[in-house]
Amino acid sequence: GQQVMQIPQYQHVQEGEDFTTYCNSSTTLSNIQWYKQRPGGHPVFLIQLVKSGEVKKQKRLTFQFGEAKKNSSLHITATQTTDVGTYFCAGLTSGTYKYIFGTGTRLKVLA
Amino acid sequence: KAGVTQTPRYLIKTRGQQVTLSCSPISGHRSVSWYQQTPGQGLQFLFEYFSETQRNKGNFPGRFSGRQFSNSRSEMNVSTLELGDSALYLCASSLVAGEETQYFGPGTRLLVL
Image (tube, rainbow over all chains, first blue to last red; front, side):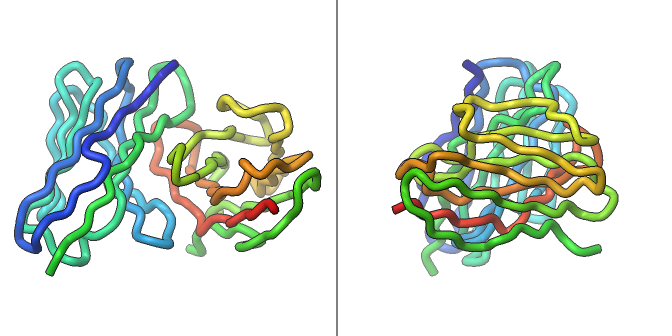
């Protein structure tokens, strides 16, 4: 079946260090979305990427969509304690209306 | 605009019982999707409704069902509850189906004893 794998599963960083999470799909995606879920909270939409090779930035966050539209990454520069949470990618498979969520990367930032 | 609301927020049931969860989407949103979130399986898609029609369904048994009303509010029902149904059930609304930002509600935390 369609799968979206995300690595790493967990990441502990010192405040100020960079962080990257990677998302890989077994099939080509129409688009990919990224969400952040704080502990005890619900997923909150961060961004959507649609075009092959697309790169988008939001302050310290950089999102990339692969050329083949099968992988994506989220990079955080100079992490802060407010970045703590689980980051999920969600891929929309072509011809469907359902998002397949990645397994998530849980980020802990040590002050 | 008010966000997505879900009721109840917490629920405790016993095996064999049934449960109905409710989701009110953001005003104007016509698509509602349901997800089950567990520590072991992550976020798994249950089904998606658009204009009162089920557009897509995940890989869950028939005990899981849903519906959507003309005002876009949606309900999800789980019959013959099993211990493994304990999870956070999230609904997400969007303007239309697919290719749109999904706005998640706070979820209903279900515990099956």
